[in-house]
Image (cartoon, rainbow, N blue to C red; front, side):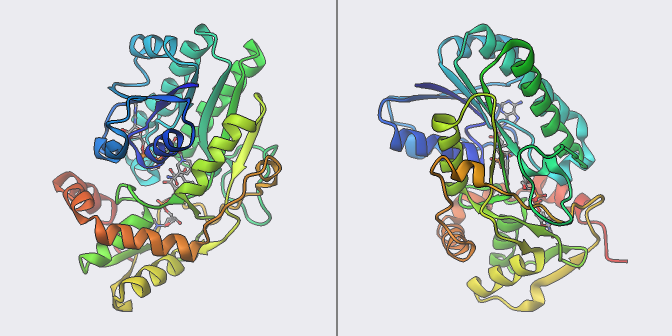
Length: 334
Ligand code: NAD
Ligand code: DAU
């Protein structure tokens, strides 16, 4: 297969690129990435010299670029997105441009090129807050943040292309993902890097909101399984099945780095904070996939990587980073 991997310089996309080239000798990969603040070409250093790899800097919302590349590939795997919930609360417009309009541009180009498969990487956040039980693929989409609404909008376009044109698209809905090469704004890399800098770990609200954390390798193996063994027209949840709250994330990071509990700092809650996401992933398990890395083992590997790769993350915590940080965390506890 000749894969067009959009957003392949980001956290999960770059893992998927590395995995694809390592495990599928016949495949070639073109990455299309705009290199936003979250994109990082260095994430692709391990594959840069592979003759089956090519990098193109560009926007998925640019029809000309996308049409050209779609014509040279067999399948699109779309990771490109604005991905941080807190930023979507500040600036929803860019989320709609990339996550909704950009998805439309990709769908249209892939349809015109006659692709036999398209994979849209989506999120468990489209189900919205889940009080009890676990979300299944047929459950209604009830997004509650500008980020999750934009991701749901992208998915609805995929559904429309399936129904209207018989377009052979697959959707995966992954849970909260952590691991190496993750820009240090999401809870786990932020807490790990703050702790390494002896800075406070800002816990939203009372720290009891729950996420179903999955290690990045497991998420990417799930996408690979859905792409190669899944059926066009189907949606697949990808979750590890655990439930971990913010307090436990902070505790784990401090324990692994041997830092004091006094670094925990409670800050005002995220507006509209979804209290819990939980996925039922038996449909994908039915295709032979299962998560291999426990939360404890994944956290050990992640923390060890951030300790060993400080030259990767320290330059990312620059002026723009701290400007966003000051705006976002200005909210003092009341
Ligand atoms: P990320 O923010 O690390 O990476 C996003 C990548 O997309 C970056 O390289 C960025 O430069 C690129 N990009 C953004 N806008 C673009 C545009 N208009 N054109 C081309 N490239 C663009 O995100 P991530 O955490 O790796 O997430 C990847 C995908 O997985 C997203 O679609 C996200 O919604 C989804 N997802 C993420 C998680 C998670 O926990 N991180 C969980 C489930 C699903
Ligand atoms: O579940 C999948 C989603 O996971 C993806 O679709 C998103 O792209 C990804 O960003 C992530 O969204 P979350 O909102 O779950 O991730 P985040 O790391 O921002 O927050 C995780 C939990 O930690 C949430 O309950 C809020 C809390 N939190 C987060 C940050 C950044 C804190 O307590 N303090 C923080 O500083």
